[in-house]
Image (tube, each protein chain N blue to C red):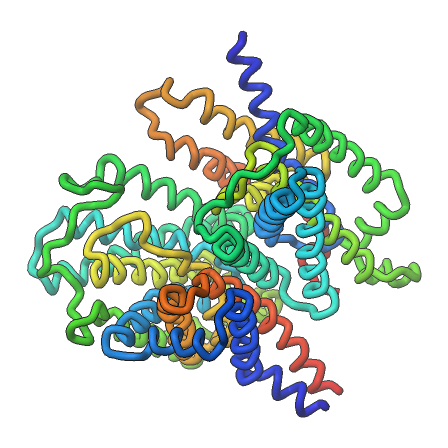
Length: 285
Length: 339
């Protein structure tokens, strides 16, 4: 019984950063921009949250900085994808390199040590608020996307941006808003990792969660609630690693770590063809 | 103004940009750009050893960059060169530690096994795309992680060398090491192999039916399909070949430099190679030049860190910026043509 409760609690915690990033992925792709840079934006969020918490001695400004950093890189991707018509995959890959390289460079500059930052003030037990907020935001994003005019416009950008223009709106501006929001969400997910679950930034701490989130978007059929469900499944895999560690001797620990990615691959093969991405997803306007 | 813009959007502009950004990174780290750059270039080109290390990095980047070039030209985003490189190295390392054949045959076999390892890894993504329509971007990304964990498991357990302390295979016997190209350095003839592949690739792109089909699929898939090109076959074949080229690179690192497989085989070559391929404009011959440029940055970056106290990670930050700006430059170039 206690094991079941531990598993549920751990699943919620482990799913939280993936939920944030996946919601970011949903809003971005529904507007027609594939955000491969989610991983980098999570890194930026995690890194700047720690830096600002270190500088101010308080985690709340750190959290804000994490969100802002994610949003800033979201804006860079938005600029690249809308104004400069850069290939979105290429731009996202560039952002991932900038963020991981930049964070490593920053660590050495600021803390004079590679690998990890010093310990900073973290949210402590308050990080529960962020867990709950993730699921609340999933519901909120669902309402925004399907029940508000703005949501309809964003979805229209992802299906047929020309129609949006015909209606007298600017699809490039709508895409920019969506991708900035996407970055802010990913940044929040990263900040949750660094000053929520832990109290420092360490290299590789995002561990591909931004990419897992991209898979969650597909399994969730590009809907906020679906992506959240998929993120929970990935969270369950991560939680299982902790719960089962040492209990199953024949299964090497890194095989357990590989499980979410293998599951994502199998599900990707199984689900594609039965789901339809937004029609103009990844297509520059 | 127009001329200035198009000048800046060319390769010169890219180099200028790198210089400016690097200077900035050096000043922020508290070093004058003159000291920083002299440390970088001395460290990369200042002697036989330095040049050797630069060319080693060039070789390690060139294989995955050529693989990526092939896939991108076919319109397929292979973000999985890192995993393909690793699998190629794993296949070569595992076989090299276990098999004993005449040296020339064994080395050839190990390089081919590298191609098989990388080819399988790229081929899985290609098969998923061709069979199910699964996004090759997500598939290749996921396969990077699966490769890393798989390699770690195998060399921590069944494939671990009998006297190895960390996660690595047994050492290859010296007669199975790839011959050295530049005496008294770590540079192997892997560089020659990479350059040969570049030439072959250029020939394939410009002079063969397969290359024509591949480019057609990349540039106008609908037209390619209607003209009778089998896009499914082309998809899995391109990704498998792309992975195979990266995989040979892994085998070259194992047989030429490390002389064993370990999980630290690549410090992100597969991702940097995306920048290399783009800077080389997806033209195999220019990709070779770009790989040399990035080889200077990679090898010189270490020296710059040691003697000028500029963190070498600044290099990766700058590589990311190069990718962004070069992708943007195509737009600037296109716009100036129209205007």
